[in-house]
Image (cartoon, rainbow, N blue to C red):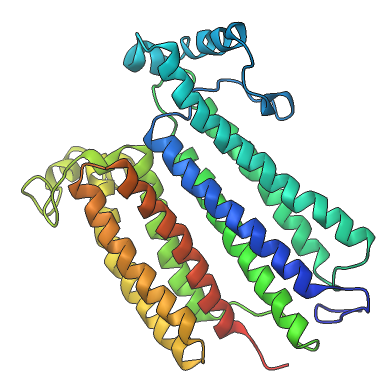
Length: 345
């Protein structure tokens, strides 16, 4: 049976790698726009899911009024934004609409070229299932996005932080998978006998620790936990949230209390930092100095941005940059992990 690494004469792994690189850029863009959507409380402005017809925004005054009337039925409007003008609604509608448009664009940017590459037999043997899985992840991401929005349309004024975390982490997993596959294809283009990289234990451990940090970052965003304090390193004059732990069960506090979640996110960051520094050192020893530098630089920048986000009261520009650098850090860690998992041809 033919394995990944066999290249028929018609295959173009370098072209596929460049294509996936463009898709990765689009995924970073949607992560950033998703952050803006969350920070501007725009996510519930579009109350319907229309995958095809929803690509068009309201085109006249009557359409805008109909969309606004639907939003005015939501708890968010009735309890928080009552009295909002149509112009203010159009602002939040814009960001949610752009976010959904980018999702559609990513789906098309993956699916349509994949079909063309398959018909033209440009895909090396063994890579088609992986590319199809990336397309399926985009579909799952869209489904999770609507599932998240639904949680905020009845009985609550915000989306579930659990569903928001699932939505964001799926996007970052898609980003890592896209970059990893592009790296495998780029390696195959230069070394036709090369095998796909494997995930080594150190990279798996570091990635798991980073996953926990990203998870609690999503919880922090979903519960607006960044607003519980504007102090660092203390939180409202305290280091440890003993009162919050005392008022709930430990598990409930860790996963549902904004103050405790904020505490976990800010201090687990140092556990993640140690793990990623160890990873970066190993990556440098493996001969990938640029990837090692990228991990170090983005890690330090991300920590400083996290502190600045808190101390500025979750300033929009600082917080969005924090999310952008988080996505770039995922890419850098993927680059390093891939380098460690490469085997000689």
